[in-house]
Length: 296
Image (cartoon, rainbow, N blue to C red):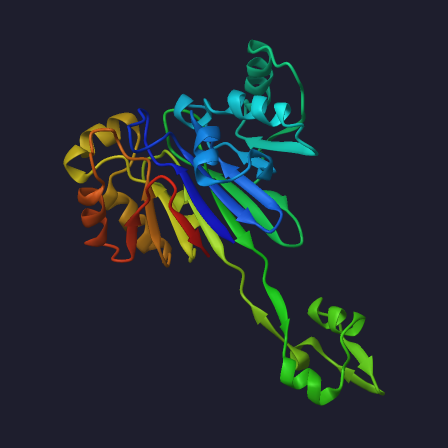
């Protein structure tokens, strides 16, 4: 699993920071959380093919989080994107996507599936699930958590002693099934061990709220907006954003393992002040920058 920060600015981009976009790569999946203006260019700079994106998850419909959608879809069409691009977003996403697709003259079309998020768990397969909860912003805004499913791994030494050959029997044990081998029953607990899945929380534009803590509970990584430092707390409250201190307090309450701050106001030439403020409360904090890549 890898997480790539393609844009880490707030409403106004800077020379160093593009609009919001975070990509999680997991096996064949490329899940893009928000698609701010310039995202397709950021993908090119990062050396990531746009066709690697299989899903786009939209937190809310403020322009700095979605203005990259038309260009990205146009590029995918020009490159004969195969399969269906899955788009997930809050209530109203279907209508907004319909209006967006009508507003531009696309020479080519791709298959797009638009899904409005109505339940906490809105995507679930055998490898991972994605959940969402409403945040507190000036428009309908969602936070997310991506949770990898626990996996069973083979106890190699045990399997060798038992003489179980490679093949379907080991596959059944990894799936949690009891098998029979040479007249003996062998349980998954005997021959396998469980590796706990990783969890990434992504908290977009919001005031501090309990749902942010819920989503980030014991997360391996909590990605969280921190638009301002605390000396701008009144401005943060006015525009319904968080300060670095508030984000750090949420990470502490959630017992997250690592906090990565993003979505910085253009007023900050560097994020040093924001990072220092957060570290006073939650030491395992870093500030994201465009093209930061982390293996999870």
